[in-house]
Length: 310
Image (cartoon, rainbow, N blue to C red):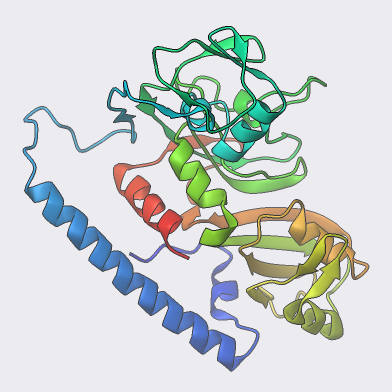
């Protein structure tokens, strides 16, 4: 299903760096559409074979009950399901000795635990979430993407404080001065899929520079630039408004820290505004800056599909 392009940004999606990229992108979209339709057809067929509760509702936020799990699971997965962070972050916390299981410090992320075990992270007892929650936030500037800040700065959790009794966390990061689409959830499996480099989940950014982007630098970015932590490339680069070269649209799948800002800074430009317009097919359409909404059931299904595709 085709996602609508946010208002004021349609020109970017129609503008390609050259004919070859444009045709390649069209072919990839057709391929993904066919795969997605086949995937949903399979899901619908499976759903028809399962009994449906007469009290089931088709509206409201996408909140899914987790089946009770009395079996064993890796410690980092247990922590991720508690809504503190994703699996990778959980594994690092375990390795640092911040996790206690039944009164004993455990430093192996793969250590098996169950819901019957007493697990503490930083001295606080945690339990797996009973419901899965998915929140889409249009993040404003001056908020940091973290669950807690020792310096007392404003975090994105301050904006969704009353959204759910379940504890959620951001999927990926947007730096303090970057605005736009941000997903928050307690679904550790989905967070793992959307942030793992192998899935190459794409993001679209609207960049405002301090000066017009020169043609030679435009070409350098398309060819790839070298940063302190290695080569960096973009998937698509274009101007939303051909008359305003300070405005640039960037589609990228890399999740490296501050990657878009660093690409332009490496060529002598200052990024005055950076706004994430699309993340894994999700847009901020009809969500005011600083506001949020729950994802629909349909969006959750599509998001999990995007998490499996490239």
